Length: 248
Image 1 (spheres, rainbow, N blue to C red):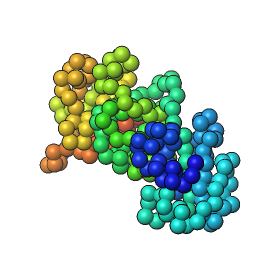
Image 2 (cartoon, helix red, strand yellow):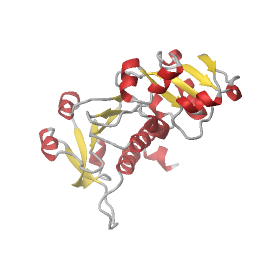
Image 3 (cartoon, rainbow, N blue to C red):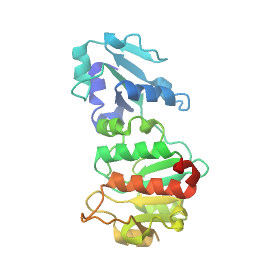
Image 4 (cartoon, one colour):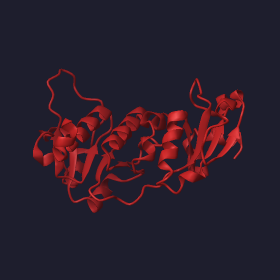
């Protein structure tokens, strides 16, 4: 693939057409290499590096390019001198005991990346994205995930109505719901979170028989940031499930 085509991978339509996305920086490339042992697609990656990284140890085909060429294909203002072209990932089959977080029309790539990072930290979570959500391979989302994109199964374009066919017990976050600290909060297979501004469509939540839960607060602001809300809920699920682990 020539450098002009590599640069095009910053756009979703070309990522979908060519089947690749980009990963910039040392940390993300290291996470990619760590995940390659478990993902048969990742050995198909290619690296583009400046001469400062010419001795980078990896099993991938590596191209040494100039700093000017690197700046042209990178999305960051100060490139680190290493970027990888990576095949779009395919989510594996669900694992035993896996929980699912469904994000409805999430728009902010930073929020998505932060959520994936949290799901990777607590492990055994899957992330489903509704139609109209930000692309998980958006460069900002990939960077915000800090490599979690390689460790959390992500499915895109999953219709909200399809959840009933996949999950017996569905919960959602709603200001009128029961406190997430109640023991019943851990009894669900899928947890649904809404758009940053509009929240969730109430009629569809009723149709899904989704049980509402709320994060108790004592502040004067109207709501929490979406990523913060997901992070609190995921922590609480793990506290209820593995209290000894999280108290250490």
